Image 1 (cartoon, helix red, strand yellow):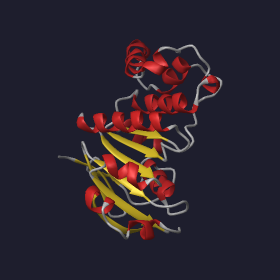
Image 2 (cartoon, rainbow, N blue to C red):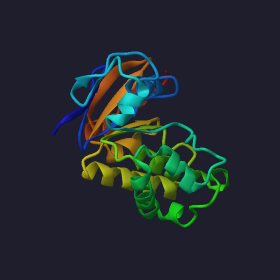
Image 3 (cartoon, helix red, strand yellow):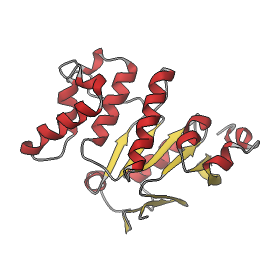
Length: 217
């Protein structure tokens, strides 16, 4: 199993889901942004040093990103959002966009709808489809369940599990430890930017000290 990510003592392999846990201010978003290249820091991606690589170069090597708050292009349609995110030549772009619309039926039913007209759950699926349109090897998600209805959260987590089963490595930054550990293989707890606990997901979920570890920033 190839290692896709190594940063600050956190490793992630192909087909693995790692839950990055912590309260607000614990450093989850900072960690994700460092992996992406928005912030400086030592990172190894796909077996190579990536500290000097620009964000665009890291994405081109196989990173997909779902930011906190979704951040889709509100004035563009569903299809236009996907087209804007797709880095393939125009001859291949249409087929890849069609693949995403088929993969996410709630989007496929409304390809011409402006993103601002979508529900929160639909916007989150659009954000996920945008991240997947280039077929990443490593998927980074920052608080993807925030503000979503339980049925949408269940669907999202099911999809993430399926992606891992197809070999995608997933870093899932979440405050909701039980949800994240329910699908993760391993978990890492951050506090003030430092790893304070790491281990198998089932062991962390059963640890009575987990709530205390996650309390406070």
